[in-house]
Length: 227
Image (cartoon, rainbow, N blue to C red; front, side):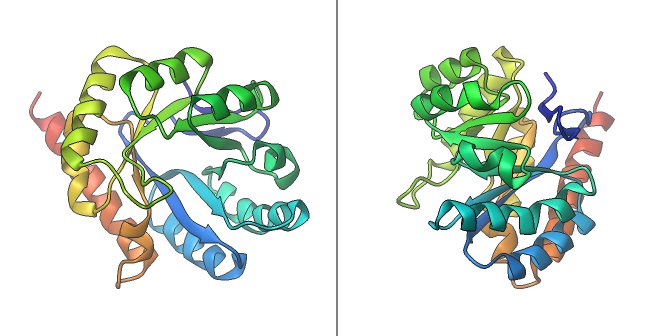
């Protein structure tokens, strides 16, 4: 399955090897983030950027997405909004990332088929299967919850390995550290999500993204060499 926005041509899953999926911190002022995202997409092959928006009035949210999306999309990277499916089209985004199966089901009629509908907040294997059957374009495992807590890396690896073996719907796994990338790739992940590992890196987000890209490429090359 290709995870794409036909309306804008954004495509997450055409590449043969796993790709980077960037998760932003909460956005209130788009200007600093715009510079960081420009550095990231210039340094790495980024499949998608997930925008986490601070609370604001609807017009403010739409304007924030409009301020960030075009520069990211210019290189073929999709822009996905966390929640808030109602602003996707008006903000010029490529889709929405929904937390939980109820939110996904509620959003699907307004998103499909023109926009990406991603599913996160999946607390069990059953939830993940429901999301895929409902029409999610990808499922995400391991992202931090509202309280900042996240599953252990071992638990995420187990979930990814199970999913990769059984299902065709693409899988995204959250990497708390760039050092976690090889283990997630070995488990069969399609996209590696990175948030704080990029934006909190003292080298800067662009340098961290280049590092992540190198790790993705090195692992993929090593795996290919073993066949």
